[in-house]
Length: 193
Image 1 (cartoon, rainbow, N blue to C red):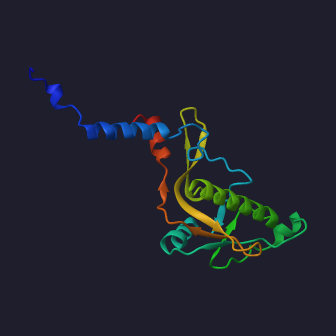
Image 2 (tube, one colour):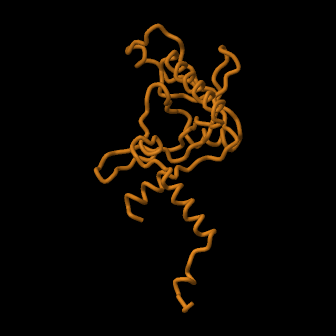
Image 3 (cartoon, rainbow, N blue to C red):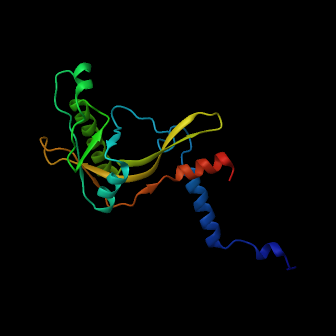
């Protein structure tokens, strides 16, 4: 055979396998607007926004210290009136409580119950932890100037409740936090890096 410089640069089987794996991984990443990791669309049944304490304290207590959080439940009332809501001082939270944007006790319990059931069902049926706390939201625009909201870091968590009378407890599962690969792929495709 005559000397051919291209033959010396041929990929090894390991390089070919790594390249194929990377291609497959990139093809598995859904870069469409349906992907909640790229286009988070909060809804009333499967999304809660934590307003207190700040996200670093939430991360520290869950991930670093391995301690759980409880959810602050607003006082039960027949119908909240706007006059009373304006005059009330914000409630004092206990050291281990999370406050959400949901101010109606029954609605909050309904959302927590829905999240608890969905997460438990998926874990039992597929062995997947689908419940995450999003730590930080990236707001960005695509080439058409449409605004998107994407979670920056996802912390796998679980909701537990030992009986119907017990409060929901949020604790971390034994998995590492997830940095969304979709962000990296989408930003690279948008900026042609």
